[in-house]
Length: 288
Image (cartoon, rainbow, N blue to C red; front, side, top):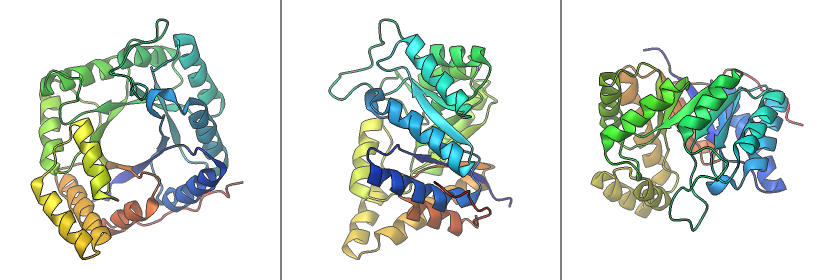
């Protein structure tokens, strides 16, 4: 079976120590020849400038294909497109276009009076610009704001029809969740690539809380397994096995690309790659 291509998501550093840590992480995972690495925005666009600086620096000093997250939150259209222009000038021409999470404490997304009202509008503008490869989010389980699962598929189709090139899913815990979603997308006429998002479980309590907030189903067996693993100090071993099995099942069903949410902790993602037979292939440029 051919090995899959991989990509990795990082969040931007908020201080000097975190900056050095990020570059060490990128040096570790960047040797796996990722299709791209992406850098997120904070909720409410709180790390907009930090993300801009991080992607430009990573592009310049590592040579990796860097994708920048860009959201609609708390900015005018002109401000948002100015950020996109700065990405392009820095050589970053891949964007993960998202509506974005509302600022902390807000009850829901409220568009800026002069901003994009949805991710579809943002995608249309980026597509019209013509300089960018555009990726978007996809939700194999119902998004908290969606009416039902069909609404998530319909919305994904609108984003792809607006000019997006491919989609990356929210994380999930069972391969069948993704496979059912892929079937629904195919039935709806979606032919663009859909990359499964994989979250290796670094901390079960934290991941469980996050899953509850974003609507990801939690298999009861995982609660029991991680409780026992914590008692026996085998959490890393279990997490590696769980993520590896999930990825293997996806690969058996024809998936050829995996996107890892690293949470800026490379060891578990690296171990899963090794377990799948993916080995380091390249040496990065020195990070200055």
